Amino acid sequence: MMNPMAKTLAYCPHATEEIPVTCIDQRTTSETRSASGTASLLAQLGAHATARLTSRLAVLELAPAHAGILKILAGTPGISQCTLARALGTLPSRMVGYVDELERKDLLERRPHQSDRRNYALYLTKAGQALYRSTCRLADEHQEALLVGLSRHQQVQLTELLQLVANQQGLISIIHPMTPSQGTQ
Image 1 (cartoon, rainbow, N blue to C red):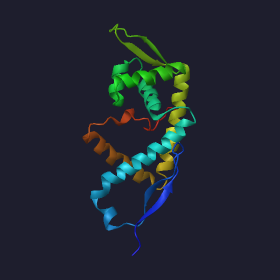
Image 2 (cartoon, one colour; image 1 turned 30 degrees about the vertical axis):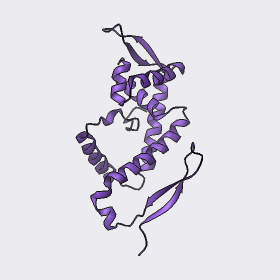
Image 3 (spheres, rainbow, N blue to C red; image 1 turned 90 degrees about the vertical axis):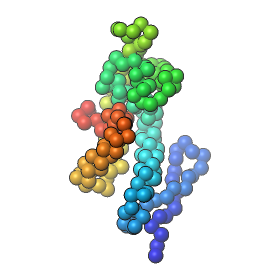
Image 4 (cartoon, rainbow, N blue to C red; image 1 turned 180 degrees about the vertical axis):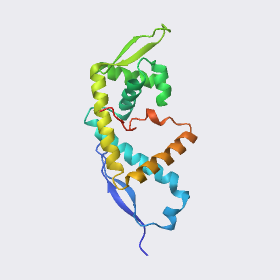
């Protein structure tokens, strides 16, 4: 019997060497039918999707965290850096660096917070809004490429199932940089 798992090499643009990865055979096996490998498969797909996203965003000179910041600020202009850091699950000290980078690129601006003088409210600039729209188009293309092997019905099913898992885990999927743009183009 042929091994349903085959070793191949993956190319990572920023890596100094090729990295061996496991490709899943398209045939259904008892291993792929069992739920025991689901978390591992989700982790593998997540790493793959993140690597592809990172490559796509590099064309716009952005990192995934930058895209997440643009998405959040497009939906909730005027939030504080601290709130933004909590939403992305990053340390406030790290958020300062991200915000500084985006401010230097004239993609966002800090304004005095209306109710708290110790904080700044963050807003996208016109350039930031335009770049956000570009990231939405890129996100749509990325999602289409990842899910090309699924029918529309299967894509909806997958989204619904993943949303159930995300909800149970307390994740907020609407802030993820890869959430489809849904009409923002």
